Image 1 (cartoon, helix red, strand yellow):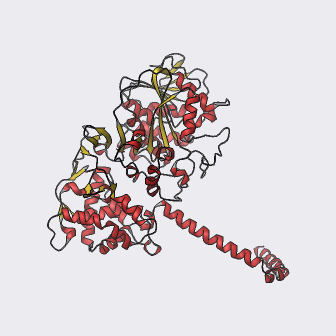
Image 2 (cartoon, rainbow, N blue to C red):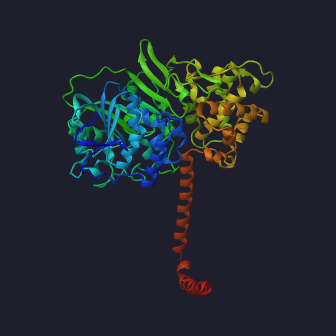
Image 3 (cartoon, rainbow, N blue to C red):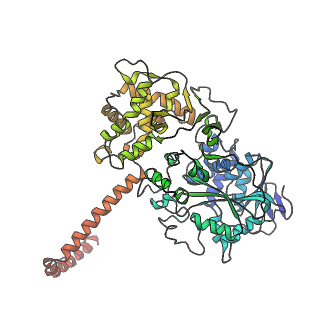
Length: 601
C-alpha cells in the first residue's frame, strides 16, 4: 500500500521516510506511552470496544478511545472501494473508523509516538497503512478519492512557515485528490454558540479568544463560516456540502445536514436538546442555556453560522460529477452503550413524507444473557410539532421552583396514567406496556391533536409500573432545571419525591426502591453500568445536577454583589471623615505592622 520513499518499521508497523525529523506535537510523552500500552493490551480494538471504553479515565483517553469520535465518519458515507488519505491521524481514533468502512486508508501522522499508537489501534486492519511524515512532505505517489483534515487545519500556523499557512495546508491536501475527489475538513467554528455562552477556546483555553480574534501568527486558529468559505475559495476548492456536528465534531452525538434548515416541518432546534456543549478546560460556567437559545437562532436563519463546529466537503474545480447522495436531514448516534444496543438514527426524506429510521451499529452482536429490554420500532414517520421538554423548558425559564416544575410536568404524567391499566387508588402502581419505558418529556411531541410518543426505541420484556417511568423521567430531566436556593440541598431522590407530591403522586420508599431496581437493571444491560449506579445517582445532592448556566448565574450574582461593595467602599473613601482620619489610620497601620513582624520573629 505504501512504497518508496517510505521504509516500514516491523516493530511499530509504521512507515517512515529516511532522515525525517518527527514533530514534537504531543499530549505528553507519559500520556501517549500509556495510550500505546493500553491499545497493545486490548484484544478488541474496534470503535465500539468495551475494553477501550473501560479504560477512559481522563480527557486524553476519552478523546482517543471514545466511540463518539467515529460518528462524523459515519455521517460521511465512506465506501469500501475508496482510497482515503487521512492527514494528521493523531492516535488513530478516526483512522480506526475509516478502516472499519473497508476503505483503503493511508494515515499520515507527524509524531512518531502518535503514529505508533495509530498503527497499534489498526493492527488487525490490513486495509490501513500508517506513515510518519509531515503533511507538507508526504509523498504517497498516487491520488485519492478522499483526503481528510479532521481537527488538523486549525494547527496549520504551527507547521507551515509561509505567510498563508492555512492556504498552504489546503493546497497540499487538494494536491492529493483525484479529479473527482473530495476534501473533508472538520474544524471548530470560532463563532460557535458555546463560545458566546462562555466556553473557553478549545486550543488555547481562554474565554472569547476566537470571538475577539486574539489569534497570533503562530497559534492555532479557527474560522467563522464565511471565513472558511473564503479560505476554501482562495485554495481553488468548491464547497459541495456542509454538515454541523453537535455538540462539536470531536464527540458528535448529532450531525445536522445543511438541507435540514430548509426542510418543511422539521424542528431542528429540538434535535439539539440533549447535545449539551462542553468546555474542554472543565469550566462549568455558562452565560445562558443553549437549549433555550437554539429555537430563536434557527428561526432567524442563523443555525449554520452559530453551530459549534463544521464539517465541510469541498471538491476541486475539475470535479465534473457528484456522486448520488441519500437525502438525509439529521443523523444521531448512541455509542455510549454496549455494542449490542448502539444505534444510528437517521431523519430523511422519503416518498410520502419525512421518516425516522434506526439501525444497529453492530448488527449481529449478541445482547447480554440477562437481557430484559429489546429494540422496538426501526422506522416511524417524523412527527411535526414541538418537543414537550423544550416547551416546558421555555415555559419555566431559568429561575423556577418545585411547584412550577410539577405544573409543567403534569401533561406528561396525565398522558402516562391515561395509557396505564390497574393500580386501583395508587396510580403509580398501575402498569404500562413495556413499550412505554422511555416515555419521558424528551420523547413526547406536542401536536394540535395532543401529545404523541416518539422515538419508541425500547421495549421492556413485560409490563412496567407507572412509578418507574415517572421517577426516571424526573431524574433524567432534573439537570436541565435551575432550583431556587432553598431546594438545592435536596438529593435527586428527594427532589423526585417532592415534585411527585406536588403532582398528587405519593412516591413512597417502596415505589422509589422498585424504580431504582428496574432502572439499575436497564443501566447494567444497556450501558454496562455497575450494580447500584442509579441508587448512587439518586443519593447525590441535586446541586451536582444543576446546569452549568445556573452556576454562571450565581457567579454573576456574586460579582454584582462584590461590585456594589466596592462602590460603597469608594463612596466611604470620598467622605470628609475618611480624609480627616487618614493620618490616624496610617499611624495605626504602622504600629500594628511592627507588632505583627515582631510576633513572627
